[in-house]
Image (cartoon, rainbow, N blue to C red; front, side, top):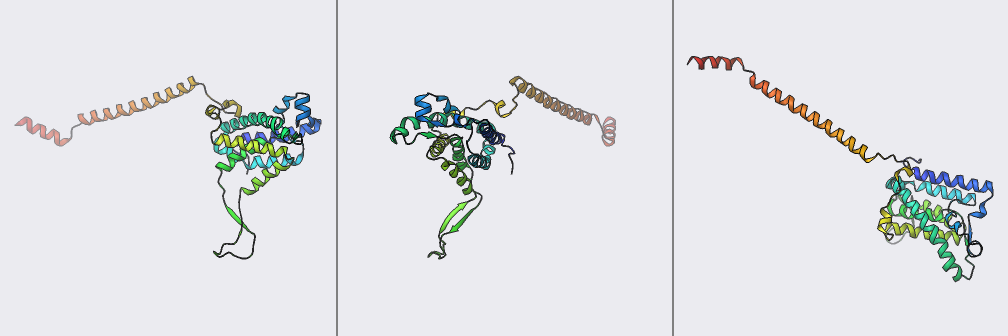
Length: 273
């Protein structure tokens, strides 16, 4: 139970915890949430859309978010760090743009200004990853919690079926309700972005694009070095094949020159007759 083969998830968890603690110690929490009427329409602080997902403003959300990300590290292990980091980056861009836009242009006018607050925190990114976790990670076991002591006609006890993934969903659901309806909007937008990636609703070129390898610590050789290594391997294989062929030919020629005692006696008789 560790972050083995999940360096991006580890960086997300450690970065989220460190950033949230730093923001709290520096007393700059007021820069990371969004009030549409005040920050967007009055002061035009659109830059808040790019930073509101960098940290949480209370310790409970930090704890639940860190636990949820840790429990979903299997997604990175199945995809690889480079693809997972690309997905997180694209999800960050889409949710940073669409979540405040939908709140400012649609939900706030429809609710007559009641829905005006978007809390800080990467809840949209977490739910985008949760959509992938739900789709690609199968449950290990299932169990049923009985809701009645009497059995049905087919000897099946009525109850609710859970799996080992249920408590992970419960953690994420609690995270979506901490500061609702704003946190619930972020969770919904993240789930939609993750589902759009999964169903290839997003542009195919965007889905196939990958971050550079050095972003996740991958060391890539230059193409010339790759070809040089391939050439050396081919030369080594060619030399070993030539040596084996030469040895075989030499053995065949030596075998042809050798003559047994019986063959020599027969040659003598043939010469006599």
